[in-house]
Image (cartoon, rainbow, N blue to C red; front, side, top):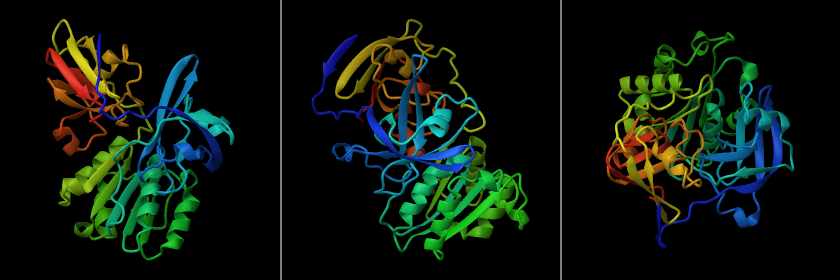
Length: 360
């Protein structure tokens, strides 16, 4: 292993213990958790609407990390929405056991699923299940601009499973002419047949043109399980919406993301992978069957990660030298990929030497 120091690179933020200020029950299996950020950490934990927080805890002596989207508007204390997953190591603890006054280890905000505030625009938000969490933050922040409009299409199974139902209703009451809210339920009939069923290709193809003049929408925000996001992207492409206007984030609710394919594509003896992180360069030999994250993590345990499924984007870095193969990507925008960014948990070295820059 070789190590060098570059003094002019930024230092990546580390975990800090944040006190739980409130735990609000949203429905039977979901809660919202508000953190109290001390004044000396206020700058580090200031967030943009649509970003997320990564939480850490030890379970049976093993470190576990999970990322949860922030649901509060810009300028408010950070608040996350959590839906319990059966037997979930993290979600059950957060929803059922966490109490005000408890301390949780939290990384500063991350993520690029964020709108540009202060510029009047019409935003259409499509969410399903717990995908409402960042969407609520985006909607409430955008509506603070008196010239912006929001249309929200929100899918759930039943009325009782709707997260943030009261807050969405309050937002509608506060902005009756600029906020259109449409609930779609898949297991509970609604008065209008159009709003009963799953948010799939067929239903989205009927709903979107009926709700709003598609060509006049400035930005589309999609958040939910892979199937819904994929269907919505296809429908929007079919309606002629330019790809740069469509932004997405995935929530794996029904099943975990698939593991990356591990067929060997790199040198038989492994590759020399150099990681630039927090102003420090570390080089390690990474076997062809290990991702860049897994390979270098053995000598750099501070490598940033959360889901390891290519969904959250925490392990994003830029390939600045050599060749690497990103097998899966559910987090990066096309422009980021074109600029050389990869998800290191899904990326394998192809050339004899590869350098990735987390500080880029």
